[in-house]
Length: 515
Image (cartoon, rainbow, N blue to C red):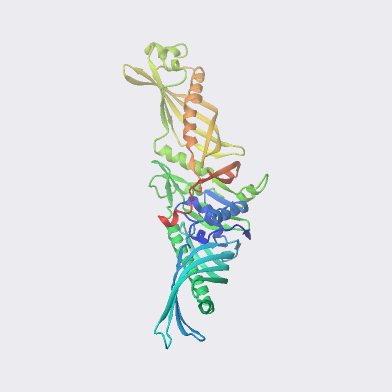
């Protein structure tokens, strides 16, 4: 059970969703507990919200929820009241507006069929117009009108909601809902004492019932709207013109007393590509409980964590390779003299002899998708490439030799804004002569030149691309904070807190029902 004593507006019930997977952090503590059934489909990105994160999400909702219950119009109430010495008085309460609801405490309790949210000790404030008329044997019609204020001193609102994976999207349902007004007071502006007592005696029950029904109906409407928004969540998100991220939900959500977990497919595909290759799923053994264990040990607890399987990285590697985006022409390096045959006359005299003082470039092509594996302390990778030496002679680009490389590197992930980014460092490389039009030559003599090109040109270029990263699930106006990385079971584990970008952030909840 998670409790809070912060005042908040009940409007949060309709504003805790947004049309993006990024706002799941805000709704996960309002979902039911289902028995987890192992599925044949696995998620390559797992998200685990721990107790600290659930607490944060709850406080975020409490402190930033925009009220959708206010102003709430309550139906007009009419009644004929028999008042001693006066007779039958026809009283009408109209323009009844619930304009404020405050809650002093709230609890969230998980169970087998759902999660119950209960707000208690709530206070509500209503304004209304009153009017009455009656007849006497002396005067045909007596009438008056004025305004009144109603203060609900104690009210409870409870609901139980269900959330389940329905063919890759989330389905939200209202399992139970209720509102109970315990105590209220009515203050009339104008009128006479008999009228005040008549309104209290005759209308208190109707006012209670009207408030309870109006709030319950509003919650029902909100849940239906939220479910519609969930159903419209995309199953893939375009990252750029080349790649899309598959955000289809897989498996049931996993709940415990202190955490909530979910999985998405998480693989990158070419834009508009629907099918996902089965070979990515062959050896995956995703475990949210394992993720939770990693996040819960060693150091202060975090709000939650994101587990990213190495297949996610390999999928984007394949997408870019298949899109023919892994080749570069290097015609500028810090020591420009290296890109002239004159600098190579000692290393490759036959090259200088055929093309004296001609400029050169290096045509780099990756020959197969880079293979990425998550190790114990970093990310290891291997790529194969061909580097063709071109001579620029009389305006013509003339290939003169091709060298094949196998390069090994290490990657170090980082959080850049709200994206998983990183950098790579060169570990080693081997090379072999693939073909040559200038005869055989000693490759070891070229090693300093090639190493300079790799370290000063190719790797910096790759690091610029990696620094852009790919987006992580996020809250608008909030960012990951104090993120820590660990590596286990072929996965990158990001344990993190969440912090506001600035004090004047745009409320991420308010856009939901304004679309």
